[in-house]
Length: 364
Image 1 (cartoon, rainbow, N blue to C red):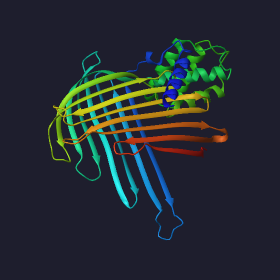
Image 2 (tube, helix red, strand yellow):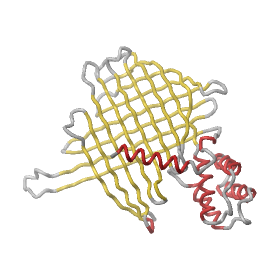
Image 3 (tube, one colour):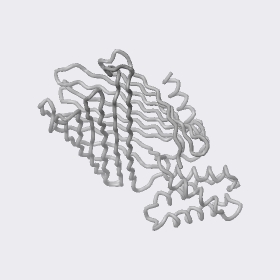
Image 4 (cartoon, rainbow, N blue to C red):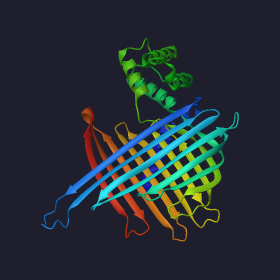
């Protein structure tokens, strides 16, 4: 079933992308700077029908993540942190992971040297910390400004403010200005510049009115639509500084990342991280994939997959797989409905754990 969903979403994304002569990956800006933060929480309380409270449930989970990604012609860095705290059946549990890396590029090239610190922790025990250095090739670039430029052209054409589609040269020029937003003293100055580029492209019947200006402002300031394009591969060696088992050792490290937006309404990302001792007697491998696809103007699919394998020193492999698929439906008057299917499976489970969550909310 999930394979059919993935294939269908990918085909839809490719078809939607084919409508555009210009590719999002054609856009390049001198600096890529992205910061994302997420926080989720859930609480469940059940008071059962028995006096001895044998079926009572009280659980609480709070999870969060933080990503900071910066990349320029000669230098880049990344900060990635995630963690959760849970309470269930009278006990607390903690987990977290994070990494910090610095990249130094060869002049005029995508070849880089890097230094990286990885950390993982479960509970209050000593975390696992490793520092590595190495080399890599490639980079991710932020193409969100071009996606916003295309959205602006789309919206104005749909509202019949434009008499024809904006040419590729105009879209690229608008994207370059949106990418330089930080250089503008105010948002109004940027909007005026974009309006001038649209009017100069000859796609409008005349001067743009207040409605067009409002649409442009909304699209430029919209959040949650980051689009990345590119790839990177890296490898190196380092040393395990801390280990809850007390074993310090040299480690090997490898990583690969790929990002592709098929269209302004889609994003696919894939990342692989692997850490191992030199003789591979102990290692940790994790593969993470994410697909975001707008299926209709009011429906969005967000699909996340994670596969991991950990082999502790002197132990047996522990595998885990997770799937989170969310369909978001935007309704009338600010109402939205989310339908989430979550599945978890791991070594030691008798069968996969499957959860279905339906929620509704309104935005003012």
